[in-house]
Image (cartoon, rainbow, N blue to C red):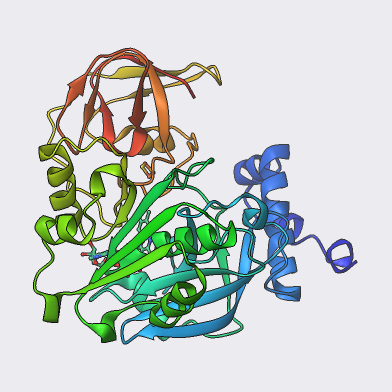
Length: 376
Ligand SMILES: Cc1cc2nc3c(=O)[nH]c(=O)nc-3n(C[C@H](O)[C@H](O)[C@H](O)COP(=O)(O)OP(=O)(O)OC[C@H]3O[C@@H](n4cnc5c(N)ncnc54)[C@H](O)[C@@H]3O)c2cc1C
Ligand code: FES
């Protein structure tokens, strides 16, 4: 009712423009977009949770997990499909406006999939824009805009017989969702949850971990405190989990911690699958991508664009007016992954140049080195 009774601000506004601009704004497509924006603005004014396009969620509770880490418990609107579709380990992208600038950051869901409320758990980063905003400005009752859940750092179905959930610092968030999921699914296998942090004061989810441990007989909960147990090494890991070679492992933590575990896995030729997720990008390498224009064919949509220079394909495609699916934009989440059917690309994180047909590439960290055909 409120929407249809509202005067049409797009027309009034367009009528004030000079003639060529007015013609452009009266194009049916542009008019449609402007009207949609007006509808969204009106709905937001009526109630901040109302939208016909955006998933939004109200902050219903804020939990201080440690001195620098807070959980935001969120009640989503009907457009958030994650209650049915989310899988443990996935993330959402938050979109916020801070000082007039639109910014996006990714946060793992720390809540159990299927739960009525969702939760993200955010560590305050020194000098960090969004984590500082969330910690200092966001309060109960505020409404946040978020994406649908995404990411392939997830537990499989069916579950393996032996699982290790391994984390350090704020990397505990996605594996906590996995632990909650295992308990909810009454996992009857054998799960070790090993977390590394400085000391008991830095243990995120301390209370919940104790509660889960009490009622989940299949769980061995191990916590390594660096301050008293000494620095965590791969020897500590092997000692704490002697049957490491038999455990399908999901790991999340700081880069150095994960690099050490990956090297150990490789050096010991462990056959059990090791899945990992990073919160911070691997630095990009300088590239000498060709200065000549190359054509990128999008085989599925039949579109194409011409690109030149060193920007990743994701940015090049966006500059060409396309909107490829993406998440982190830093090579972590694989949301932008597609199949390169033919052509040569350079990986900006490893420097690898590859002309293999039908290989998976990530648009946000790949630069074109020749004409390409992509399965998009
Ligand atoms: C898949 C994925 C899942 C994530 N899940 C979570 C989560 O559950 N909880 C959470 O707190 N964060 C998570 N992050 C990190 C989050 O997206 C932001 O990067 C983080 O909150 C910092 O944002 P900021 O705007 O405060 O800092 P920015 O202003 O973007 O950066 C400030 C500085 O902090 C550094 N920095 C950013 N993140 C980290 C980090 N984790 N450790 C060390 N330095 C860092 C940046 O490199 C930069 O130097 C996740 C990231 C990804 C890619
Ligand atoms: S957008 Fe996340 S890997 Fe490319």
